[in-house]
Image (cartoon, one colour):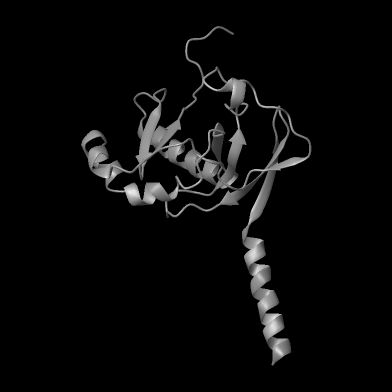
Length: 180
């Protein structure tokens, strides 16, 4: 019985470990480790996420209130799988905020507040979301369908809004009237 539990637990742990697909990219400052993440949508495709990527030196000490300076390079692979601290913010007077901010934002202040727990002046980081090949294929198909449907002017850009996400497809066609 104990052996069955151990084997079952190992199988479940193996499946959980297989769900995370780590990716590594090389930047001008060093290598980053991110991961592939499925988005909670039937329409949106998976993305590669690189979280907490420094884009400037920490604005602390002598650099406080100065123009940002490029970050230092790092050796090895920087783990970019977790959010970095956010800049200091106060959400204490929510009634005042409801007068100054849009309703769609103030309706979700409790959710937003959970992301503001880890605050620091060292907050100049980016969260980068990169479409995967699967997402690019989907975008290509959407663009192709638009190109076929829009035979009058196939040179127009297509702007699609899909669950509050803007997808910008540039449709390329052979140049017309060009010189050889």
